[in-house]
Amino acid sequence: MIQTITTTPFSDQRPGTSGLRKKVSHFQQPHYLENFVQAIFDTQTALKGGTLVVGGDGRYYNRHAVQIILRMAAANGVNRVIVGAGGLLSTPAASAVIRKYQTQGGIILSASHNPGGEDGDFGIKFNSDNGGPAAEQITEAIYARTKTITHYAIVESEEIAIDQPQTTALGEMAIEIIDPVSDYAELMESLFDFNAIRTMLASGTTLRFDAMHAITGPYATEILEGRLGAAPGSVINGIPLPDFGGHHPDPNLAHAKELVEELFSATPPDFGAASDGDGDRNMILGANFFVTPSDSLAVMAANAHLIPAYRNGLSGIARSMPTSCAADRVAAHLGIDHYETPTGWKFFGNLLDSGRATLCGEESFGTSSGHVREKDGLWAVLFWLNILAVRQESVAAIVQQHWQQFGRNFYTRHDYEAVDATTAQQLMTDLEQRLPSLVGTELAGLEVSSADNFSYLDPVDASVSKGQGLRICFSDGSRIIFRLSGTGTVGATLRLYIEKYEPDPQRQSEETQTILQPLITAALELSQLQQRSGRSAPDVIT
Ligand code: VG1
Ligand code: CO
Image 1: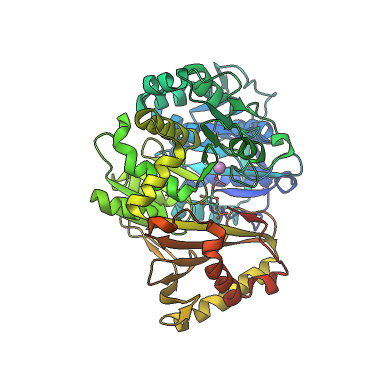
Image 2: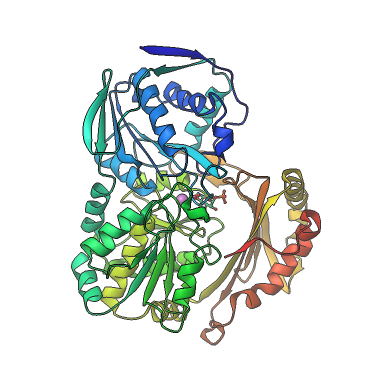
């Protein structure tokens, strides 16, 4: 029944920031998916005789991939596979399930915030037994294997039923189909004060959660409307669709338009939030108010003692390098350590596993804690609701008070998408060469205190990750950062991150883009980004 299929390597299967992401049509090439999956089985030997979790965000090709993975798992001696019904599991739920059932890892099918559908993107990622994205050493080993692969193993089978929770088998391998929501919902109830949130919602606080036609719909409906009693209709776009309704399931001001318009209308709900394709990102809004992800992390850290799960304090706070330094100020105030890691959740794994950090966050709308090993969109929403329930103040009031106490880190990210890859690479190379000569000079009226290509030394396993983004730091705490995205599938995406610290409460209500304009102009002049890319403006500003 086991077939051994002859194959030849593909040269482009190196996982990026978060797994292997390509156009659906690219994945549809014969053997493309199979080669990568076999490389996982060949390198992750604990899966033989072990348990594997499988689930994805429901995008086009998800169901097909689940069938292939189940048949290959059986052929590669996996003992048991746990699958979310319908082949669905949000990324944080997959992480929770890997941990709860102490499995040897999981395969998550998602291209996250990238568009879906037949013409959209697909992705595949391996998570280790800690529930987190595989560390770089592992993704590099999988990549190395894809370059030498000659065969893969798969069993013949009819279509395997995956839509109803039940236990079945494929050959010797047990297949356990589980409800994708219940383990996750139970975990959330153990962390937060659901009674306090329920009372707040019952006494008139209104909320809107935009699932963006993606995976968090069933989770948000069950938790927010079902368990917490939010009014029916509080969750919008709650049915996952294979093409996300033709939209870009990215929870930011540009793509979550419907939600943003409502929160900035004349009669807004008190609280608004959205999550992305696979449920690990979050955007937090108040009535007529947008919370930047960097501020969200800082505010969550400063208020964590109000939440049952974090009542006894945080061990440390970690943020990715381009994330604003707002959380560092909270860590200093709390007297705990803070860490600066490269972009991508995999770099938080060691800090969380070793107990050095409790909260982690990225500027790209990602926050989470040690409860799982992924960023977690709905968790962040519940964290905020729990803060609101205790403090009984508006989102805007809470953030503004935070700025008064800690100062405000004005922050923006400008994305130039689908830029010619060679042009983008050349820009980065040229700029990197000029960095040493910038130190001590003035840019935008500010003194450059340091400039380098960020390199990370992991304090736990002493591994070094180089080339993680060009940063120009100023003596007043301002920063300009250039980085190439590792999740795009067309050309290169250049990200420009700009930050400026403002301690004066009188100046904290000014408009972000205006305050940051001199730094933005300086960054564009220095890099010649617009001339080189032929663009007059960024594609997305967040
Ligand atoms: C982006 C974000 C990064 C995030 C990654 C995966 O990566 O910047 O912070 O961890 O996406 O998120 P990049 O390399 O394109 O900048 V998700 O929600 O796409 O899994
Ligand atoms: Co995501």
